[in-house]
Length: 220
Picture 1 (cartoon, rainbow, N blue to C red):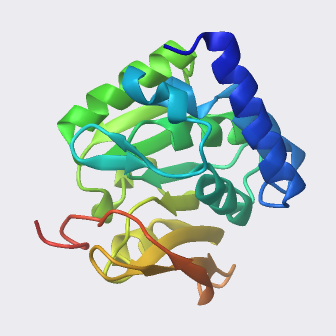
Picture 2: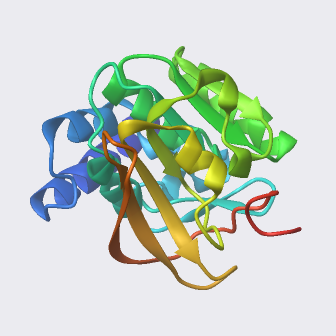
């Protein structure tokens, strides 16, 4: 077992490497990564690997994303204090914790798997995160009770952009979502809704995420 000090030392080294490489571009994202290390959001047997820049297993056959991918999506989302953010695909709760540190307000995150809802809630509680609300449900439908959102971040690959997410996006808002095949590569898109409601899509590049399952995603 690796002690907490060594885990932190390894994690800080990873964060600084991502910062030097320009993957982490902004000081707020860097500070968020340092405040909530990835090892706080994985099972005990994987903590010693949490600093490695690769996905890791979490319960229910899912994964926690590689640090570089999380950093890229957070930077693309351009998160600032006060923004209303919805995350689709809670997983371990790590990404939601980072978002909460960046926006300094309540964050809503939807997860379809009860086992991961429990896992994420426990991780968030242990990490001292108090402003993340984990909702059990079909993330492809968004979360209408707290809409509209300034940012929606989807951490699962969809066959197409779910209409409810576009509808729940504020004018001037951004949606970050992988779109593509079920278990192969997807393209990561940044979707902007203009102040007049027009939708503009930009492709960032190829990514690989678990599938978004639901009414507006893939069928189980």
